Length: 321
View 1: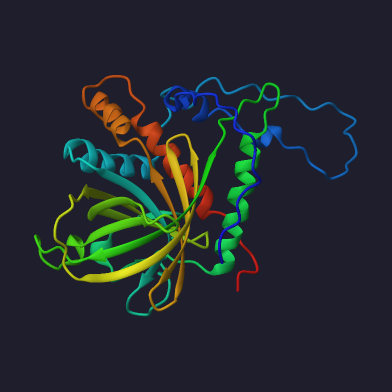
View 2: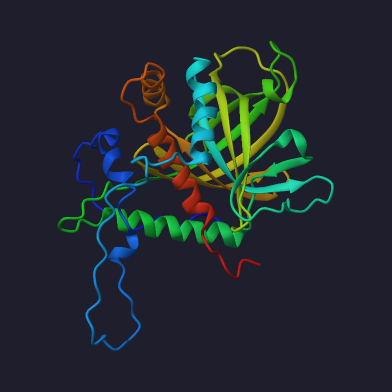
């Protein structure tokens, strides 16, 4: 199943605003979306006027908002692996799928009721980043609808429009004669399916990852920090694998959502959904400011990235079998 494209809109040609100037407007703990919703239930107006509660003057008895533990852990994880380590060619991505118990072959079960980060060293688990074709179709329509809504300009309600791209590519994986035949050393050459033009040559190496178990939703997710090292043209080893990749990409601010259908050499299809954090240099800049005790948006960037993943994971998809 190839993805559906959102309806085309004329391009304005205007330059994009700097997304990092808008964090304060996006992360606003005081805003409540329920305030904007209207009930469609009919009811009788009360005869006695209700008193309106006073607005909360302070967030706590210390007049501060305690940190979100999951966001703080992920922020520390990214700070350590991206800022402290000073790595080049860093990729940060969250894949959506299931944490699988390798003893049973089923999705992991734990006696917890809300999302939590798993200590993977204490469990025999693996992560599978796949979904059904019907789930893929749902996300395609959901993301297309989200794209359309972001283009609408209402008075007093400015939106940052999403961008959209549909690509069809071929990935070929080769053994690396310089560094051995391990999976981490494979060279991936990506070409445009239509023109045959080489898009990238790289070696992708995973640096670190954490698994987030989400028992109240249909999906879990894995956050990974990788290095995508450019590979200069040189002799290659044997061709190991080839895959056909049909990808729909939706970009909003510094996050890119990729919905992909991958066809392997034997004709089997897999469907994948992932979110990538763009502009790693900007993230590092805020991380360095944080390490110096200066004003920064490091944790706000991480929060928005995580919230985008949460929105996808929490979609209530029915009739998917």
